[in-house]
Each structure stands twice: as structure tokens, then as C-alpha cells.
Length: 397
Image (cartoon, rainbow, N blue to C red; front, top):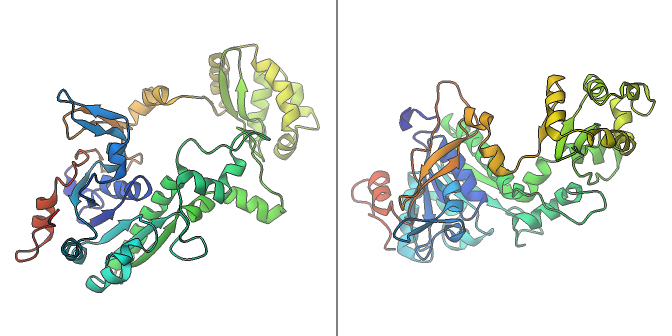
């Protein structure tokens, strides 16, 4: 499928993004066809460019695969944000783009002449999305933020890990990536308004708000009962058996989320009488007594291998899974069927792989047509394509 027929073809995005949250929002739009131009400082660019693993070609030229994963399908220009001429050039680009994405500390770009109010003066249709740890206003506005600190602040770490265990963050940086998802979603919602004749506007997307947003079940538990949600390891506060169990050789996960599925589990372990036990008759009773249920089921599961139980539970229609590591899932037959892993060529010529945009749309075949950009490799190209004759040809950097 040609690039011009992708859903976001024709939308121009200036990304002042660094590390994860901003670049992830930009990558979602780039994957769907938007022309995302990444603005980077001349002396090294986005800090993630130096993050390992670094793939080297036969000349010893290295390129970060971490950077590649969030910046494929984009273009890169360099600009010194403290140079008045470069700032004026970026204002010219802002006149002709649809979206700005930035994740600097609140107030930084405003001081440099590139804040929302300044750019809105030259383009009232501009959608300007600021991603930050705690938002653009409020007591925590100036507080430093990284994914782990916002996971802690948001309450997420209080329900992650084992009961009475040490604090544990989620292994995936969900603060950064949840904010990127909310940002991209909100940008597209505002784009519909602009396309219908409305003006642009400022989007204030915080990592804190995003993590509270995806914790709807935990927050509603507190609002509804007054109880403080607790860490339960792999267990669930309202379902059982719904957790990891250990077989004779390995762990696996069972999610028997209703009475019928519970009956199938009890029969599979040759303990059908448990379905008549007063402690386990309803879903809520099983959840309330899940520690006792664990003590009854665990010895049975230890009699056979994980593969045995997964085969048996699959046969009975009970949701279950091995606990895969990333090499296992990325080479899994179903992941291959979904085409979630795609080839990617780095700018230094190294052939690698990346994960594809994970949503399927009828009539559209998404791919990864563009390599991640070398720093500033599109300075001339963007100036030529975005600006008309007579406008500035590009930054000095």
C-alpha cells in the first residue's frame, strides 16, 4: 500500500520529543502515515540515540536499536533552540504543520519562544500537545519525573508485586507509554474538530493522569468500598482461580473468570467436589477465599508439567498461558501469523527487526517503510518540502 493512502497521510507533525513518551506518541502517528519531523539538538540529538543495544556495521558505525524502536518512519532535523535564527525557522515550520508534540519540562519551550501561545499566534489551527510527568499547572508542575517515580506517585506500584513484598515497578515503562497513547488519541480527537472548521488548541497530557486513567478498576474499588487496593502478585481481587501456579517444571497462568470455567478447572485437577464447597461456589466467594483455594489446587498442579496443564485447560476452553519471556513470544507462531515482527534496516546498513503497529485495519496494510533517521539527515529535505520559495532554507546547525 502506498504511503499516501495511509489514514494519517498529509498530516504534518513537529516532534520536540526525547527518550520515550513524546517519541512514542510521534511514532504512533508516523506508523499511520503522518509526516513526523523530529527536531533534535545538533550535539547528539535525542538522548536515546546513545542507549544500547548499539548495532554496529563492519565499519564500526553504531546505531541504537532502542532509538530505532520509537523513531522509525520519522525524519530528523537539527536546530539549536537557543539560537534566535533557528527558532525563527522553527516558527516558519509551525505555520505549515498540523501538530506539535513536546515532552520538555513545563515552561521550557515557552521560555525559548516555542510554547503554545507563541506558536498559536502564527497558526491558529495548530494542535500543540505537551506531555509531562505531572501536567503544565499545579503544585507538582516543576517536579522532575521519570517513569518509575510516576509509577510510584500514581499508586500503581502499591498494587504491583507480591503481597507484603518489596516495592516493584511494572517491567514495561507504562507511565511513558500510557501517556504516549493518551496523547496520540487526544491529538486525533482534536484533529477531527479542526478538520470540521474549529481552531487548534493545547493538549496537556500528564503521565500521572494517564496512569490514574488506566487504573479504573482500582480507583473504582476505592470509590465504591473505601478499601485500599492491595498488591496481589499475579492474583485478582474479584476472580479466582486467576493467577500463576507452579507445575512440576515451570509456572503457568490460569484465568477461570466465571463459574463454568471454574468447574472445568476443578474437573481437570480431579477435584469436582470443590465446586460444591461453600467457600468456592460463587466468583466472589472464590476471590474472598483464594488463599485457601491456592493451597488446595497447588499440590495438584505440581503433579504434572506446565505443558500438560496448558493442553488440558485449552481443551476445556479455560483461558491459560505459559509465562513467556520476550524471545519466546517474539518467535511465537501466533505472533508470526499476526505479522507483529517486521524487518528494519538501520541507517548504518544493519538489518534488524522491530515490532509493527499492532492493530489490524481492513483494506490497509501497515509496514515500516522508513528507517529511523540519522541525526539531522532531513534538514534540507524538510525545508524544501514544507516551506515555499523565499522562506528560510533551514537552520544553521
